[in-house]
Image 1 (cartoon, rainbow, N blue to C red):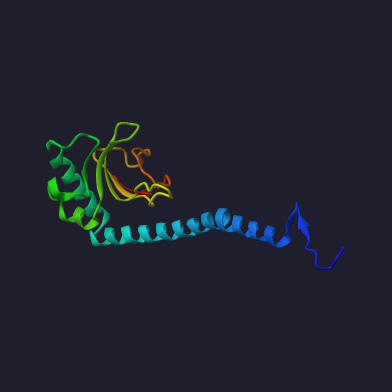
Image 2 (image 1 turned 60 degrees about the vertical axis):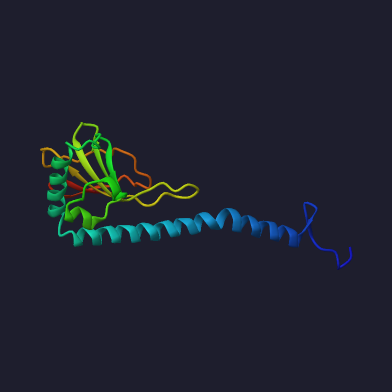
Length: 177
């Protein structure tokens, strides 16, 4: 065997095998790892931004009061169809109460949970993205009827990017991620 011959693996040179392995790593392993890191950073940023908006709105109680006022006054509108009635396109909708406007929701949705309890959902983030992970979900849910103080609504509605976390922030108001 001459010293100039290169080691072969399955009939391929060592250099070629190294290039194929490196290519496979770059194409199949690295992108999901980087995507996960990016998604975690985006989730952190979105949640911090949403909580800053809540602070600007005054308090959870202010948000609850404005949401209940909005809920009671919007039911008679023709576009209130008991599913969703407002999106970030404000061209043809009534103005929001100032407290809700500060939150800058892109979707306000009327939901009912599995116990038929009415909920006003103020979604600040959470959209589907084709070809990659969905935007992290963040919403504020306000229960629009009297329920027991320990009642926690069940997860309902669509919510790309949702993690299934419902956290009580006060009487009748919840943070949903």
